[in-house]
Amino acid sequence: MASLTRLLAALPEPLFSDYELAKVLGVGAYAVVYQVRHKKTQEDFALKVIEKEPMRVRMMLPQLIREVEIVGELSGTPHIVPLLEVTETFSHYFLRFELCNSSLEDVCNHKGPMTEEEAFRWLRQACLGVKELHANGVIHRDLKPSNFLVDTDGSLCICDFGFACEEKAGLTGMTGTPCYSSPETNTDGPVHTKKVDIYGLGASLQHFLLGRCPEGPEDMPKGLSGATRDLLDEMLNPDPEDRPSIDELLETPQLGESLFTQWLGQWHVILQGFSGQ
Image 1 (cartoon, rainbow, N blue to C red):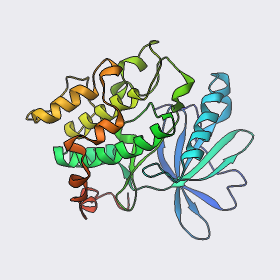
Image 2 (image 1 turned 90 degrees about the vertical axis):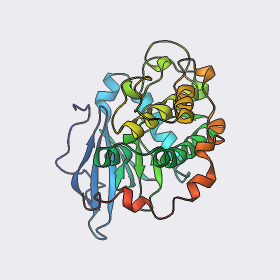
Image 3 (image 1 turned 135 degrees about the horizontal axis):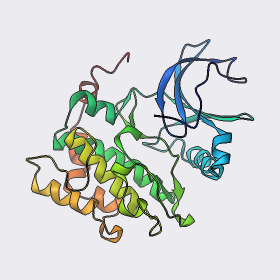
Image 4 (image 1 turned 180 degrees about the horizontal axis):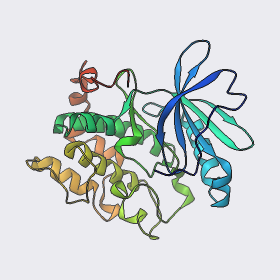
């Protein structure tokens, strides 16, 4: 994938004195994420690098500034990837995060489709993170398995707030990733509300169950239980008003706390094979 942010040969100061580039973790349309290592402690971190000038030319600097502000305000919130440091230079923003082992897209690529029980255990954690976002008036607008990271404790952390906004901003237009985007974000249509994220959660659940990117709301695995199919139909409803709220989702039997607490010590089995990658 081509990125508006060019790859770095080395970090600039003030980061160069403390950190060295280890490897590229991911290349997105607007940013590059590196694994960096502290020179003294040898501790590894994730560093998201965003180049300013391409964003300015495309009139996307307000979006970039909004991302930095939102991530900073939400740092320390459960199931949101912790932001440790923001460094701004003349040409770049550098956002340093805790390093997570993998994403749920990686898990699906490695293991294939999840069982319904396993998929709902991960979805519950994603929903708890989204509940925190919505309680703060924030819409993520790009929820998908590659933006669900898994930390060393086996906890899901939502990342990549490049498309995030405050609901009160009343934004419209195309945003997010097509496979996971709601109808209202695939056109220059209605104002985006928190229901955008419910659709993204539904499409992510599809991905968990299929083991791959879904090809639309009707792309369902065979043998799906009636209750799960009904829930997906609600989450992927083309009318945002008919989708459940995040609180209503967390009250469903599939996402109840009792099921989640039974998942003791299993995350390391799910992630087996990722350590050292």
